[in-house]
Length: 275
Image (cartoon, rainbow, N blue to C red; front, side):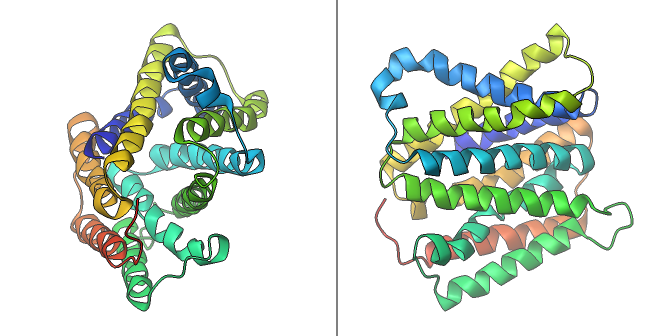
């Protein structure tokens, strides 16, 4: 799970580097295309039937739409905010998932979980500091990112009751690509060869990250491995400092600590014990 967090940070570091120079819409499409290509290359190893057989296509369609929204909002966040700020918003996703689970999965959150959810969102507000004049509407990108990924995770759990992980991985990326492709009509220009090389590096990071998640959940329950997901803030702060010269503020650090602590507490107080 730690390797997955590092790979996702590598993916978003590359995309933040690119989004400052190249067309946003084209990058969103290219990122999705790269991940689909990598999954297609892995089909001979995984097996065609394992990847393509789907029992709940409507769930995969909804997951793909949510991933497309998440891809767009993540790129907008990376373009507008620091890498660490983006990741503070990103790691509120488990809190959103727990809050939405009663509506979709019938899995009720405990009183302690609701308390930690409120604390976690308070931490995100402190870290993002919406009172700053330069934040403006950028905060909406972070909200859209957390909501779309939270819904995506809830329906991923619902889809796992009928479809395998490799099937879910392939269809969510394919459907996300199909949703983003029509947006190319507003794209401006094309990417040079060097940018495409970085795009496929990002795609490799993203594909590896998803497979590390699958492996982690094959060894242990979510309650055990999911807290490692919060190390993303550490890797994002390190990458932001080394690559972009971003220095975290005191409010960002305090907010990040609250978000991480609340997320771990939500997972640890969950009545769910099985993988």
